[in-house]
Length: 287
Ligand code: UTP
Image (cartoon, rainbow, N blue to C red; front, top):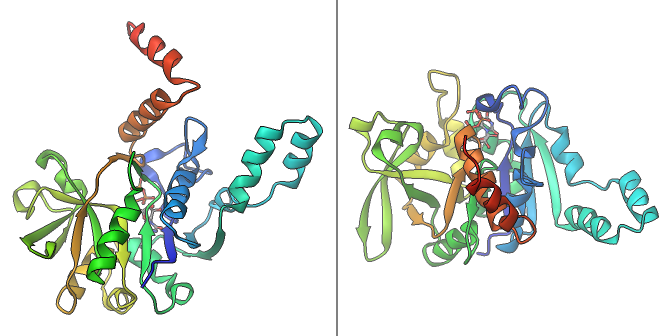
């Protein structure tokens, strides 16, 4: 079955980015001149997704506004004859249909995804996290996962090798490599390095089947009161096979300050209009 729908959980508090995220969603922080969320929406659309479901929370209106028409701005740009900017603004609105549903309290990623249950219905769907930005010169990150799903018809999770000293910040998979591919045998949320089953960390791209909703419903909140997707996926392993996709491309953790800075610098260096001047500037720095 073709993946048509994608869930974007964007209701987190973004505490790692305070004070910037006090009134502004972290998904609206720009890499050069485009908000993080737009990069991820474009990734989904390029992969053939036609319906986007955003799970939002308080202080997230800027995301809805960004993908909505801005009549005043359009009139102003039209009046000034700024056709390129006008087209750029309209393109964002025309990209695809987006539905919004609220997660009233940030009770974890699993809880956020469960909010989308009725909008997803009974079909497989993608999940994309707005703070993981994947740069790829080939297929978009999520399209690499849908390719695996097309063959396996089972959940697919994006993973990346991470240095062991950083592994405790991630969900981590245990796996076996078979003719079928990399089959996941267990998932552990944020294990200490000496208990991590591997160095393959879960990255914010998933293809899930609708059965996951039952497992999330049965998942107890953790010590912090959050319902973790990883725990629900682990429980689902008993009745479904699950595959890992080590995607080709560069992943930036833009929800983290250092990751965000790296992404900003590298996206700017790749730009035709800025790259050369910015490179010259960086080379000349003597800080
Ligand atoms: P994170 O834990 O990385 O995001 O959640 P956060 O909670 O916003 O950020 P910090 O850690 O406080 O800085 C991963 C993704 O899941 C979403 C977030 O918006 C983010 O995209 N999320 C998380 C929700 O939608 N709801 C939640 O309750 C928790």
